[in-house]
Length: 247
Length: 247
DNA sequence: CGGCATATTGAAGTTGGTCAAGGTGAGTGG
DNA sequence: CCACTCACCTTGACCAACTTCAATATGCCG
Figure: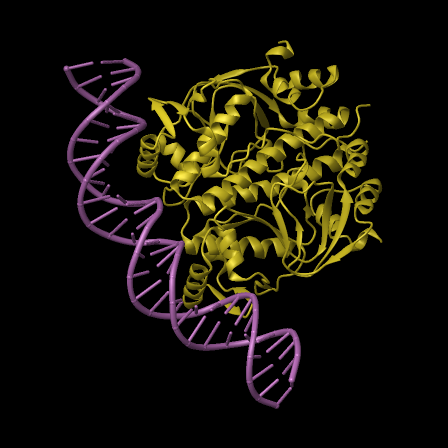
């Protein structure tokens, strides 16, 4: 496989120059690939975690189910993501993962990361940075879920999804994109019920903020949505000045 | 300063063996220290971020204020924490930080991290792991705030604080500890109002779950609280088997 | 002693949850 | 090609949890 068709390499090159060696190290992670069907549970909380996954295509999400059945989606993963970094320091998975759409994943054992740690401090810093940025989106999510009302929550979620998809080019120039997740999952992501997600999206549609055609969403007034949700695109820019020098 | 009185070194040594060189690298980060008075704002969202801080003593927390004044505490920082890792990839701070109690901080420029990246892949992996674990506590927080009721939220918060403090030994054998944050801040942390925090804590006290004496809290039935909140102590154990070898 | 921040308690108001009924659309089998 | 199913979405009526507003209490520090 050439590194040209690696969405991970493409994503990382947005932020910093990669050496040939770096590209080689990353390609090694995407060696094998495996197809997983929509609806499959990739991993369960408590399972031993020995592998990470680079997502080549498809969507998945991490979630937990509370004792009484309430469910919370913790993080949505998009093409180009490395799934499992959040499990690195744990012997057993902290939560479940479901594959939302048919997906192509490239699994690799987590101890293969040591090649990166040993050979490329710079690439290590870059991967860490990506994980910290995703972290920042979690802080945003905490802010949203902890203090915002339903419309603000949905606006924020749609903006985040739209901007994540833009990184891999899956968004039209009119800010339209396919969102293959059912409303119940969107609700689980932002802490609302499926019923109230429906009501809220309908209201946003009535107000001309968004349009929907089955599961294709269009952000008609993206700027306004940004104000409503006080949205910041965390992936816009990265500070790499502190990175260790290539050597 | 000897590394013996470094809470950062102490914390890290819980999880993996450190070489003399590692200890040296870490001590370099805690060279200078600076005292900051309770109530001071350490950093504001938008400020350039050039330094990280090792917390030697004291509490601080990160927060954001929404346009209409609603406030959300994003993360509480304890002694031994490295504050600012979450800002590494950003040119400007993503949110504000307030010092909650008089604190001693050791600031160091973020580009001094490259010594660690270059010289100790193993220490790099360890620091990354710590940041991923903190990440996991954020996921827990999202679960709590997104799907749990007031009692469950407060139970979870108290357990998390108690277990974080245990790492630095600030908890009595009867599970009692000083919690110097006003109830409004606790509410901002879990997405409740100060009023409802008061009601909820009173109710928990009536039920014999906790006891309070001014700001000293005792978890009378810690096990039961753990069930209520479905709490997991993320700092209990770390998988270091995948770490790059010392070389 | 006075002032200020914090905590408690009560009463009334809202947002979103719950329960339930119906509608829509894609996929399947006859 | 139609009927059946199943998953998902929508809408209405009622309800509960938490918020808001307001008054009062407590406690610390000058």
